Amino acid sequence: MRRKKLLNAPSVSLAHAIIDSAIRILPTGFYRRLMESRFINFGVETTNICNANCTFCGYRFMERPKTTMDPALYDKVIVEFAASGGGSINFTPTVGDPLVDKDIVEKIRRATNEPSITSAMLYTNGILIDRIGIDALLKSGLTRLAISTYVGNREGYLRYYGKDRYEQVMANIEAIGRRNQELGKPVLITLHLRVAKDQGEWRETAEFALFSGLFGGSNISFLEAYDAWSGRVMAEDVPSGCEMAPCLSVEEKKKSPCFELYRRVHVLADGNVGACICTDLESEIKIGNLAEQSLEEIWKGEKLARYRQDWLKGDLPQVCRTCTRYMAVDDFIEENPKRVLVDWLRRALPWLFALRRKMRKNNDDF
Image (tube, rainbow, N blue to C red; front, side, top):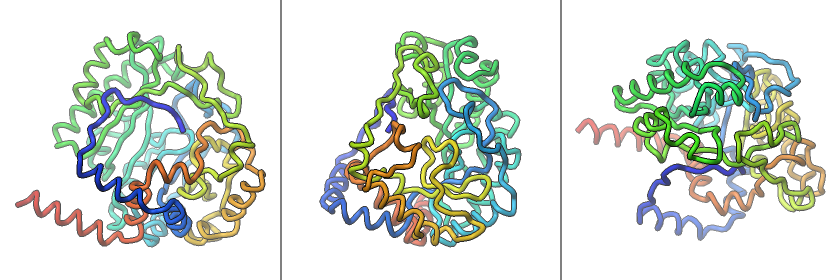
């Protein structure tokens, strides 16, 4: 898992602490069986094309075809996801920028118009926010917008993001932040800074002061350790002072499958379905294709079961051997039992969460 730091960590209420303690009483085996029965995290890659060329990203090494998802395939994805229980949808690809897809706003609307699809989010570098349209994006049904960027100066942005778009991106972030406030904050906007480890290089900038006021410190994080993308990204490619994340040995990893094999379904732009979004640049971990099976059939199918079984025999996918984001499934459960349970319930009992949202709305109206 990647290490990142929040600038101001949010406080946790006593009530939440009590609930979390109660949830932790349940054994990890119980949660693992829940995850095996129903995927709790869902993503769709409407495009794997990017408009930046970040030094710390694997995009510049990707060999699989760059494409945008066919509208008919996208509609099939949404229909199947909604029918399977829906929940939260993530439009972030392994690499690429969702806003490169000129139809992304309509695709978000299509998804969030389904009653069982409760939230939608995406990561973007922010370059195309003005082209997509600020109001269009904020009113699309999107519930969270995560922006990966650099703050400091034009030269630093060009060095790490590979495009001379610093002023444009800073203006885009300010504009969407201000408009989001005017609209009553319909979208949670978070900033994910790719900056020097020495905070003195960027914390005193006018841009950081502005963004702190717009978004709040708890919604701004920065990365200290970067993935090497199977040895392709080097220490000199990441912001100064930051590190390359350590990689566990295969011997350590083979004791337990990675949590991603129990958590996620990720539909790629060509219809192939993977179980990992982290660093599977060439979509090595394919567990099915929507032209041949439904999402439910893929999740409970032979390919994914074989990946889990082979893992315990020490036969890991090649991309997983060098991945620094590996986390044993039981460790993930122990750290996130509430998240696992809530996400599972949200997909298993969508009517319950729809009722909860309706009650909240009625209280607000009253």
